[in-house]
Image (cartoon, rainbow, N blue to C red):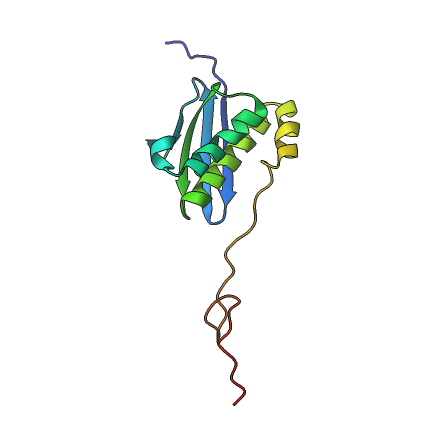
Length: 133
């Protein structure tokens, strides 16, 4: 059996405490996340739209099939991790796409994490009510 000459791109994306491993091949534009179609996995409309933005920005809608496995965090962080991974994979495929995605801010890892709770207070920043007497 002869092997097909297909382009396979791979990248890792991160957001909050989520890590996404993304594999992309030339295809019809289906996005699979953890074995489910992306519309079934991300049921929030906002997250579905965010997932399509790198493709729209790079003008490659419907040209790649995406298979992503995501671990950690919640749905929002996982969606951000998949978007970051897809953007990195697209940037690795073409230097012109890299400039476009970089300018749109998709290649920058959003480093915001949850701040830890400090001892002697109820939360990260919140303090117990001060009593003068």
